[in-house]
Length: 91
Image 1 (cartoon, helix red, strand yellow):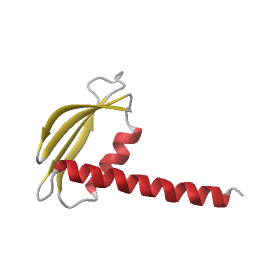
Image 2 (image 1 turned 180 degrees about the horizontal axis):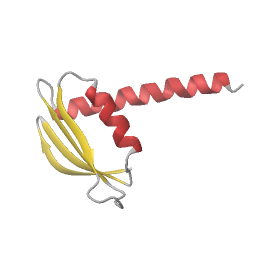
Image 3 (image 1 turned 45 degrees about the vertical axis):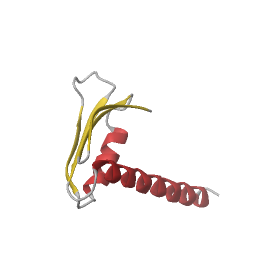
Image 4 (image 1 turned 135 degrees about the horizontal axis):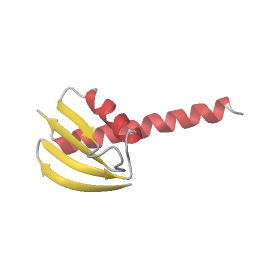
């Protein structure tokens, strides 16, 4: 997965997630919405045939970079837990 920064400000990030349409951007958006410091988060596809998502995060009280980093760590932890549970169930 490749990320291309568009805007990198203290409380505002805009970036492109290359090669991702809805699966990961939707997961990331959902996780960020759980954070009370996130005022706005969304992503869009410029065209229905695009393979890249433009992602926007706006925060208050916490930097956008920190909110994004924390959300990614939480997703990683949840995926590890899922993997362990799946291995246990599939024995």
